[in-house]
Image 1 (cartoon, helix red, strand yellow):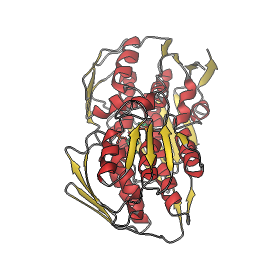
Image 2: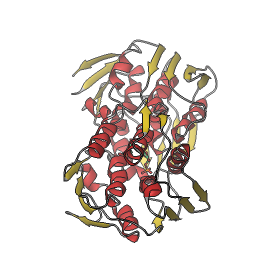
Image 3: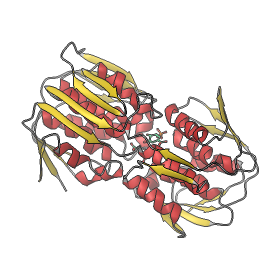
Image 4: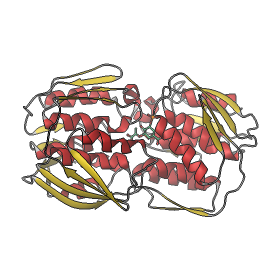
Length: 407
Ligand SMILES: O=C(O)C1=C[C@@H](OP(=O)(O)O)[C@@H](O)[C@H](O)C1
Ligand SMILES: C=C(OP(=O)(O)O)C(=O)O
């Protein structure tokens, strides 16, 4: 499905309920499988959370998690320590190109039995669940934080817990801290000192309702819309001013691009502020890789340049996001260059009309480019990809007065 997006709205007014964070949900689903007396509220309705739930509930030998990176990584650890069960864990074509070796080798240090069905280092993998008693493990920390979260999530159920030594620069740290915070919420003891993380064993937890905060990565598209509108007052629920999600860094980032964020209870309202916006902005995004696409498209829409760094993980996400951005922004007339871990966009006032944006099976390509419809009509190819994290995205965009038609 290709969608043509256009709008004559210059003032954006809406109140939108975004569903729960997929990162928090997929962690809590795994924890709920380990500790069935916890109850979850405001869970994500994303495809990634649905496949996670299905995989945890099912009893099949072949478990297919489609495009869901968190499900692939978290379930690798889950099945590896699930004594007596054997599964083949696989996913979409792209998932078979996303590396898993770092996690497999860490689990092997603990005594796990995992083999590769096709290419060494990549899914699909065959996992024979073992009883794990070892607890010390070293892991490279600069490829994906999801490998580390995967180990942390299963750790309380291991006889001796876990002591992880992180090797090298640590990427996407807020996601590791989110995992530890959720464990702490369940009264599971942890420590993170220097480059060593410890999780202490805990066989049972108290019954508890865990309410998921709404998804800040999904909120990013509304920050972008507010920045590109003439005027805006967009309210989003249910958010916290102090969040476990690193993408809440959006508030400070978009302040520099003219968006003010105001909290009343769990409702945050984004308003467009008149005033000075710099000709170029610089952001280091090692802590918040998922909002890089949103930010660069906002800059193009504002006619300003940007230099974004800390982007080395983008190459192994749903697609090579740096290359995808380079190709699609160039079609729109932008001057953009990328390296392995950075992106530079030059300021320019021109944006080509009626460009068809390819989405590369990447939900964030579709959603990041959509706000540009405030400036030019734009066509989003395979728009259904948004369901990976945000199935209601197009309906919510309509509620802001966008005209959306099939093309
Ligand atoms: O743990 C998580 O929930 C996530 C961690 C990040 O991945 P990396 O650690 O691979 O950067 C992020 O990009 C992804 O969308 C979700
Ligand atoms: C990178 C993402 O997801 P995952 O790695 O879990 O597939 C994302 O949602 O942007």
